[in-house]
Length: 141
Image: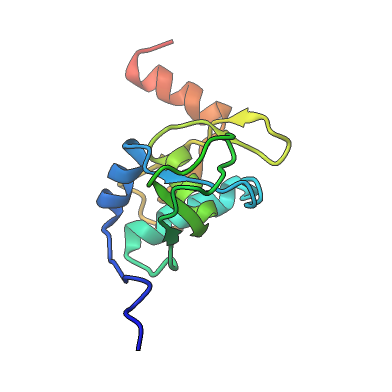
């Protein structure tokens, strides 16, 4: 019998955000672009906030895999499953720009209202009116 070829690891959301911040995730060139709608990003953040299961992330350590940006993986975590979720976290929590399916850079902002009495209103896709209201409330224009 040959030894295990994989290892099951459990990471907290904070640890995953740390890997994102350290730029440890890479997307292989075979992966599709980011296609989630903003409402799906909002729903992921809501699920994480409430402690609901959000699925697996499968990565592969292979230094020779070509990535979307034209480089090679060089020992980083190559995203096989979970690219949409990791990219959503990069956009909504880490504040990074993402490329949409037309290769346009975009920012996705999710508004959080901690005092909402209706749990379905706790998170919202931030639009221009919410951004302007936040600027006025905070004294910035």
